[in-house]
Length: 179
Image (cartoon, rainbow, N blue to C red; front, top):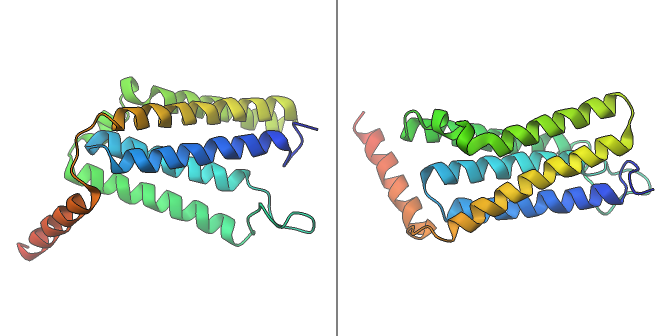
């Protein structure tokens, strides 16, 4: 059945989340400040959901799966990266988080959160078709958001990633030596 647990619809959801993560990673390397933070957030969110949607390795499922040991590690790593990115972003750009969560910019993520929350409600009510449909819709919202940021990143004029990383490291070393 298409909507069965670990069925074909979940494979499409995983594909959507993988595309979201890839677009987010590329956009994060080619954008500045606020857009970079949003692209990083989208990437981390999609990695969490991607890991969550993967079937647990057992008996007949051994190829496209995640072990019970690695699942929380992957999720924790993505959450940690998002936490560090948030702290660094706020430290370097005071008030940046309030700009990032402004509805003008964050409404797609808020809408996706509502849709995914409704999918969890459908799961609790054991309405599998509605759960999977709402999850698919929520994940597509994330994918289109990443595609929009990726498209936006192509018009950004930023220095190469290596040069920016070296400059950030120099600033960090300078701030440590002055304290």
